[in-house]
Each structure stands twice: as C-alpha cells, then as structure tokens.
Amino acid sequence: MLWIGESQVKLSVIKYAIFDSSLGNILFVSRDNALIRLQISHDDPSSIKNKFIIEEPGGIESVKPFLNIAKQLDQYIKGEKVDFSIDVDLSGLPEFTQKILKEVKKIPYGETRTYGWIAKKIGYKNAGRAVGQALKSNPIPIIIPCHRVIRGDGTIGGFSLGIKIKERLLSIEGIKLSVA
Image (cartoon, rainbow, N blue to C red):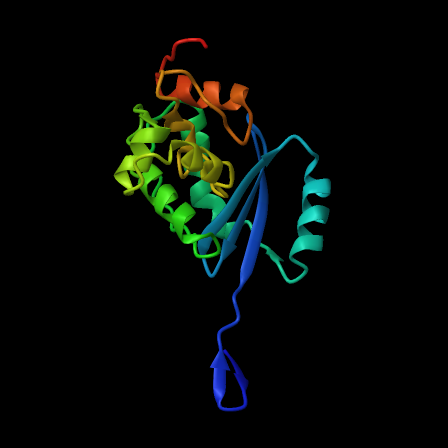
C-alpha cells in the first residue's frame, strides 16, 4: 500500500514470464496474481521480453507464479482434457467484452457455440458480429476458449492467433468443422 495524504492506494504488481511451447513462445502476464494476458508469438524470447518491458517497465519477471498454468497449457496442447483452473482479471476491458468473455469461458471442452448464440445468451440477440469483434480482443486465448466460437453456418470463423492455430486447438479437442 502507498499512502498519499489521507488516502491509501493499492499498487498493482505486474508479473510476467515467457515459456516455450509447440504453439510458439507464450508470454504470461498477471496483475496481483490473476492472469490478464496470454500472448503466443514466434518471436524469440528476448524480443518478446524487450517489447513487454517497454509496455510495462515495472513488470517483474517471475516464472514461479506461472508454472501451474504452463503445466496445464502443456497438458492441453498434448491432447489431455484440461478445465483450466486459473484466476483471470478482465477488469481492464469494456463491460460488453467482459460479459462475452465470461460466457465464452463457460463453453465446455470439446464443444462449440456460435457468435449468435453467445450474443443471445448475454441479452443481445442480434449482436453476433459485435461478439466476433469483441473476441478479437480476448487477452487470454485458450484459457478463455474463444476458439470454440464458430459461425452460425458451422464454419470456423476468425481467430486472433490465426486460423491454423484455431484449427489445431479444435482438433486437439476432437472438434471437426465443415470447410467454408
């Protein structure tokens, strides 16, 4: 805690770590021990670290807080069914996006939902496109499984990490889709 005059201000602690995976190098970022970002990149770890330090100069590199999530993610990539038990913090996102991501987080392993279904579920029956746009900004893909959201016609739809990774993630879960 930091005291300013009569007020106390809680300073957030940002931690990060970079892990190697078959999907690429994964940057994990937490704020006060809740995951706020998972980014997959084919850049080398030092480049990822340098970019992150520019964004968050006070960020603390620490592998230990992310060992559990890295282990769960590794198991998932290897084809094991994993229900990620990870604390996430979506507070930095618009309320509409938070509603969407909270609903998407409920989609069970091996199942899909459509953009329109998500829109109806959160009370915006004609907002399928808006759901798709909000999912583009999902800061925690895979853990919040936006790859499980597809088009109403049963085709794959988009994915912020690229269609190839979406296809791979769906394949890991045994989901087969029709080709557009």
